[in-house]
Length: 319
Image 1 (cartoon, rainbow, N blue to C red):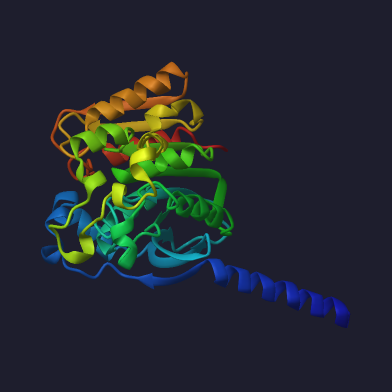
Image 2 (cartoon, rainbow, N blue to C red; image 1 turned 180 degrees about the horizontal axis):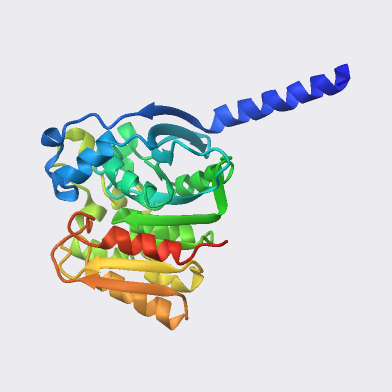
């Protein structure tokens, strides 16, 4: 190789390394906490055997990563196979629920990721931008939607990712984030568990998302959308509509599987039913399953929810 060609090669290589470091930093983590010490919510989500399996498994890597979104450093978690050489792996983008620091990703989410990964996927999840000191001013479907869209862009640049097979799932608020993302992009398929499809209905049933709350530990309190979004009273209808997929279901071109409990006390099943009605009206591909057992997140330890989702995704593989 001539000297000039060699210098050009080194420049390209250094730019590639710099670019990768700039947008995607990661460290390997472990699921360390004993089952007996996890939260009551964690114990509701997982039985001890599934938790211990996720804790002791050796085939997958758990990672904490960070990436750039609108110039901000966004954190997330992932679960990827150890053996990736020569493979192209389908991806699930997982959209977390909660508001601000309440519901933010932690090690307790890793058993979910592992269950999905062992069924043939790599899993990537964003914490969105409104955490830590910004948790109180979470826009819940404002600028933070870009954090999901930019994560998808990042994932498509990863060498082992099968860019022909990218899927998305969201739980609760993550369902709303899923719908809002699908308004902008088209993926193979998506799934929403206990998701918010009608924020106006959600606000009527639980006005704390508009008014805020201050009765939790300080880091988990929330100011409310009316105290966060500019000129909220004059623009309330606009703000709620842009976060309500029932208002623009015609703009979603990704097949969606909606799973919800009829007895969900946090997000009304009526939003899911209306979303299905709108998708049907606009001749969109979708599937709806309503469970008759009280739950919000439909954990796989008590429901067939994750198996249903995996089957849905695999039925939309491109080969």
